[in-house]
Length: 446
Ligand SMILES: Cc1cc2nc3c(=O)[nH]c(=O)nc-3n(C[C@H](O)[C@H](O)[C@H](O)COP(=O)(O)OP(=O)(O)OC[C@H]3O[C@@H](n4cnc5c(N)ncnc54)[C@H](O)[C@@H]3O)c2cc1C
Picture (cartoon, rainbow, N blue to C red):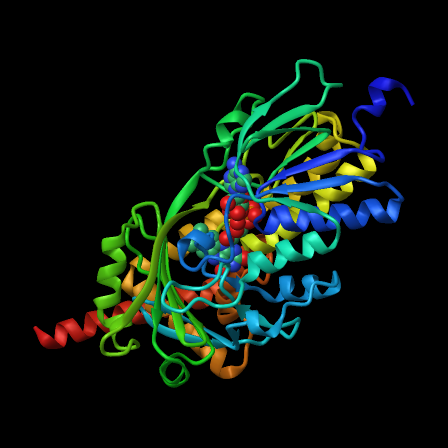
């Protein structure tokens, strides 16, 4: 192998550094160590992470509602990652969709695996737990052979010649690396460094969250194992969410114009107030960012950017996206090398199929959901049909709703299922009926 070629492959003694020890960084480190060992390559994998997951409250937590979907639950097990029982806060058995047209309660029909809720960090301020999901994954990476440096990476020096290594600066030290993996999430100062090599980070939208301590009895009585999704049909607010976690409730709102005040109004409004204890004890609050587009050029010679910072699924299952993109990334790195051309040939096309095309459909579906939710008549017609489907045991509109908000199916499949002619015909008839009913009521009143 020529010197030029050798420089762009991972070989024994290669140094791999990962910026970020969130799910994508930890999973990349774990799978890279295991893949290298299967190939008989002795590599050094170092994770740089600047968050202490053992801290309670926002300091130790990424700011996430913490739902692990069925597919991810299964994939983790298949890869030998057994989530300890104490991490599971609740096992979810139904979703309730609330819109202007009423409520739709959909029971879990799929049996792939459990849907569970967790805390990403060490739980809310008022009641620290003993470790969360991110800390657990980081431990798994260390057990597989990765080294952890609990420091912020503040500097990246890209070489002029692609045969030379990249240098990163952290704390008081420097590290020369063959491959630099960016798993730093979104809205992060280190992103600017990568823009020097053509990287454009994903666009983001806002999310505000709070944790309320309701007590286990209250959750059992009023919420049970149900996740609530609220479609408001309001401009700038895409949806609200309420998630049970043992004695806690995580409540959040997502959308471009979401502010803490919206969340406060939502809590005191009739939809939520009836489900909370009399004097709800708010334990934790944060506002954070969620990616809504994919990054541009998340790779270059010796550089690969993964997880939220690279490609992820629109609005759903960011943790599963991290898992999937990591698997594609590790295979591409070890089987095909670390040059820009090889990432373009072996990493990008799979990600394009999995995230870029898929997200076009996702965006259309969420826009459609917003339009339907903002019109009372449309929303009622929609809900009526879905309720009928659920009662009759049919799997159609209720299933579409389920798949969209649990992320169980691909957005492309959900989109085409929604536009099935029989369903569209039913929707038109139901909407006309609803409209005529309202008109006749109005005529009787006047
Ligand atoms: C409100 C909200 C709710 C969500 N709910 C869900 C859900 O229910 N289910 C789901 O599957 N997904 C959910 N997601 C998405 C999920 O949180 C992300 O997809 C996931 O966290 C992506 O993981 P990551 O490792 O790429 O990034 P992150 O989790 O953001 O991790 C990045 C890590 O890098 C570290 N870091 C950053 N810069 C540096 C630096 N310079 N030096 C060292 N370390 C650094 C950070 O401290 C952090 O630990 C939600 C997201 C939001 C915002």
